[in-house]
Image 1: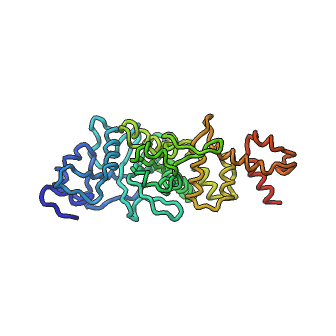
Image 2: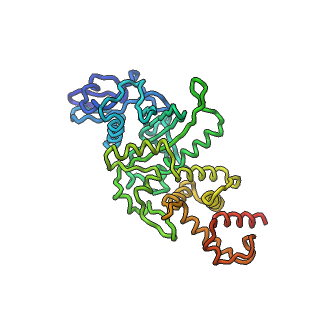
Image 3: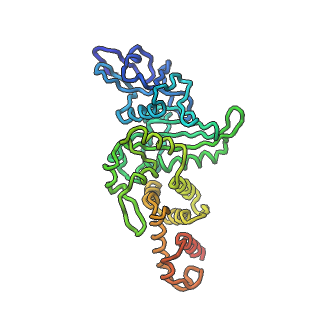
Length: 372
């Protein structure tokens, strides 16, 4: 800790000090100090953590654990959206409220072995900045939500294969599958079962216009073409832009933590296909494509999942996801077009162009030939 010449000093992340109350920049935030000076970052948890902001006065030094300007903006925007009148809770035992749900906001300490963290393959661990523990008492659903304000122009060098993006979009489904195998139900004091979820959101501090033309974020579409992403494509990947007012982006963050979209369903099935391998049982065209990819791919999980996102994030003009994958499978199927080769009769190449389920047909053809 560095020395200061004068003025109040905030000693540490949770240290009580006279200087704490004199920081004029925190009067509208629900900051609670932990008297023992210890941090609690284990997730899940139910203690409302303090969030420290850097004061505007030059002779006040705050640390450790201060927020950068984008993280600070997220906290201010969240509290400002939930409590526009400034009547936020002042007690550590009182949660934030949103649509009848309890929200406990926690700071996640980076590179601490007790913090909440995720990773894919052998990548670096991803430590999201904030934990939002959301309790829906009516529906009996607990959501371990996490939010990470991040500059993606530089901070996601791998594009759709970047470990931060895949840790947010894909790895929660992997972890949920691991937890379900332990067969330990989550119940409250009265023995009522609760559903447990893990979901994340990246809040992009890079503006949309700075990202949309990056080749690393290009998407595949029907016609076997690539295109620049739209905001809606990023949002399906759980990436929200911080460039707008809090009334625009905070509701999306909370909504994405508590509800899934079509791409989430694809990620869930992809996690199952990756884990089960040949034992995975496809039920629709997306599943058959995932099964084919899993049997064909020599890629790492990051490369594998990144390619799935490129093919499935953008729907076609009719709102269908996976048109690019289907068209590619249809082309592969055409190479098998000779009498009796599928095992369904004397199909011709002209009929393949209109085949309604090319992924399923190709999967069945490959399975049959593997067993002969």
